[in-house]
Length: 132
Image (cartoon, rainbow, N blue to C red; front, side, top):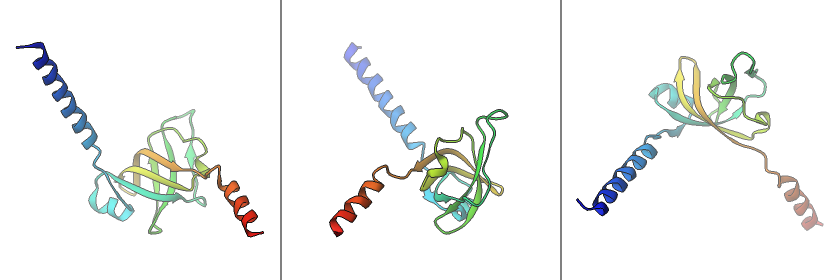
């Protein structure tokens, strides 16, 4: 067999492996009620319930962070993140957690936060200038 055919076969196998790994994350967006009903991996969008306690003690377990999240339907559940507490977590406007329900808790393997924009103050100033 020619070397070019061997290289082509290796590239095809690598492409198939890459596509398979990308397709493995098939979690869909939903809310806590869908996570309870399906018991599958779901992405829940919500906001931090600031009136509820957060628990993070890096001396005991640096990869265990718990907090309460309120989804877009107003349902609040405890979220257990198997990772360190993200920096500026309390400042986030919106949170997307990926995981599944285990009993009454949502066990998250990944978190994505939408933090306040550093340009918000500038937008307010521009609006004030245009109003006068």
